[in-house]
Amino acid sequence: MNRCAYIFLDEAGNFDFSANGTRYFVLTSVSMRRPFRWFRSIDDCKYDCIEYGLDSEYFHCTADNKHVRGKVFDLIGDHLDGLCIDCLVIEKAKTDPDLRIAQHFYPEMLGHLLKFVLPQTFAVDTDEVIVITDTIPVNKRRKAIEKSIQLALTGQLLPKIKYRILHHDSRSHYGLQVADYCCWAVYRKLQTGETTWFDQIKEAVRSELDIFQDDVLYYY
Image (cartoon, rainbow, N blue to C red; front, side, top):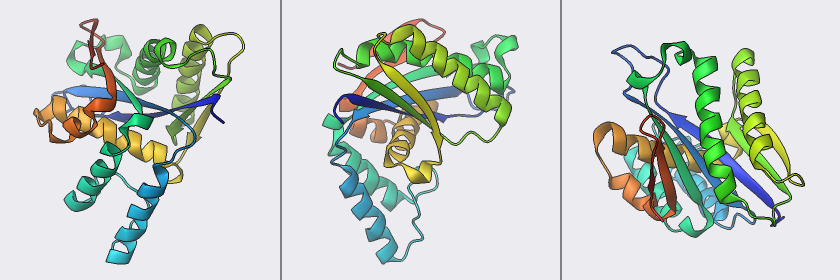
């Protein structure tokens, strides 16, 4: 199992490029390997919430109340040694008009993130990379994203390394829920300047890549 690497992906911001849209769009990858020892703690937290009286099917940062959010961030912060977080930051106003369509914009930017992350993340002891995204409901967009991931992986992995791309509902993976929390923390820092949540995960954040400034902020 230790020769299989996982990348969980999430995004924050919207695809509205008008003045009403978000200023930033952020893509975040969380890389990890089994055994996921810290999943037990998050599972216990979910059942604590249920026993408290909450209808907690899964964790979602923007929907969770402040008490649940704080508890989940505390749990993530206690297990940062098992995570590696990388982010791609897009200031949407600088995006070429030809890319301002979801099925073009998202795959293009995701490809940039993976091309940056993969060479730095996986050593020669990796036999397989499994990329997991949240469920992609629009078939046209799903195919474009899969093609983008395939191109990025094919160009960056060693010949002997296999890879798979899976689209699972975030309810099914604590890895996707952790990626959601980490992405939200980075996005919150950029969009509002609040660093409270980012500071809790900063130790595991390896890099922020500003796509239009061609500038990488390395944290370690």
